[in-house]
Length: 470
Image (cartoon, rainbow, N blue to C red; front, top):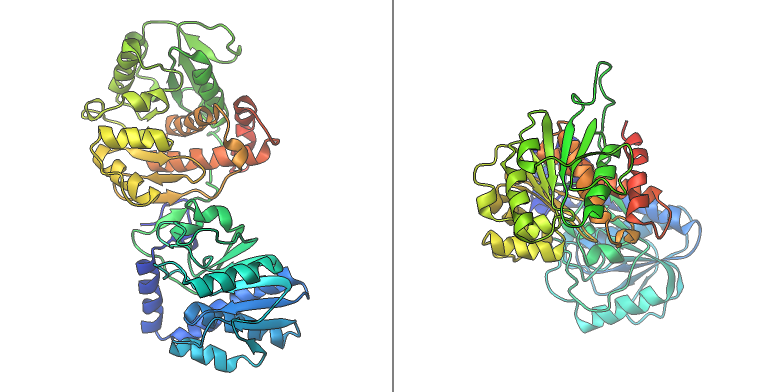
């Protein structure tokens, strides 16, 4: 079932799911040719806007992706645009041959020496599973280099749709990629997503697909109720440790992400802002407070015996919990066997591998595959973060975040993310939804922050990110 916060046109489909969705449209009375015209017409609108009267070269392959390219070229030709088709080979499907027959402009062979303004890659689409042959690769690279702007149709040629892997080295990058009918995993997973430029979707009428992954979209977050008070808005307990700065960063982010009360349990209140409450009582006592609605443990925790004890105590509280940073290195199945509330873990790649070993998960497949496998093995919600971020739940729900700014690659930003997620949990949001909301807030805060921001500056932008959701 699609996530309640996300419309079905934000679903992410595998190649098999997309093929089944298209077959359902055909069974309902459409045809391959009709769907090709719909896709081509929608894509042509984007190409027409980008070209703005400049010359367009469309590279058409032998399959249905090439057929879409012929449709695009004919639309531009009919509107009086400058368009030329370069064919890598003769059409090999009935629909592609039909589209080729409806195109009334020039078609050049693979040896054509074309230079121009806008290049549209319609060589191969989402069904590609093997590397481009040397001739096709050379043609693609030559045309891409010879044009000022590059657009990929559905996916850049040479990309594996379900994993985001590059099937050939040295593939060109694009200014925009036009997804046909639905998003594919490669639109969100590294390394493919890094080469795609702006992402736009061309709808063709695909219905919601049960069990489909979703692309993270701006959540709808309501203001507190008119009779709200700090405890009703949620009390987040943040467990500090050997390096207090990380827990402070997480706490400050949590304050801006909606929780009514953030309390840091640490040994010292030095260098802590006046509006952040620090409790120096024994951890075993304060985590029995039945007003707690969520716990965050891990940032700055350390990895010694004392840290292990603090992690165990924190996870003994049956409220929802977020485990991050050092907590992920220490976490094992024994910590989760009797947990009552949802557990959200936020590993980067190295921590993901550590958790896979701890929970006896094979760790193969795409990042999405690995996140789902770990979520099911541990009964926890996994936020596999990094240049691409995937959120997985034990029940199979899966979301992919859009690319965020690369300025996030600085120390402490993961602590801010943990604070955002924990704050949404404390506010009473269900675990998977809280993880999705926290990831979105984190990315939006980064978008609003100035370049080369610090983690502290990122945390300061969280309230503005939250305001965008109200």
